[in-house]
Length: 61
Image (cartoon, rainbow, N blue to C red; front, side, top):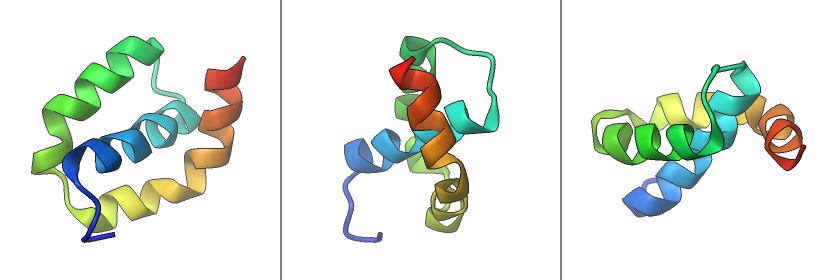
């Protein structure tokens, strides 16, 4: 995951947070991810992997 650029890391944060139940719109999640991505540890982003499937389902409607 260290080879992922910041945009790719942000793309992983959005479904992770959505799957965790963050009460934000898709646009707000993306804005928040772009703002925070360079401050977050790669291990935290990987931890969110457990929420990606639920997040994808939530975002897909």
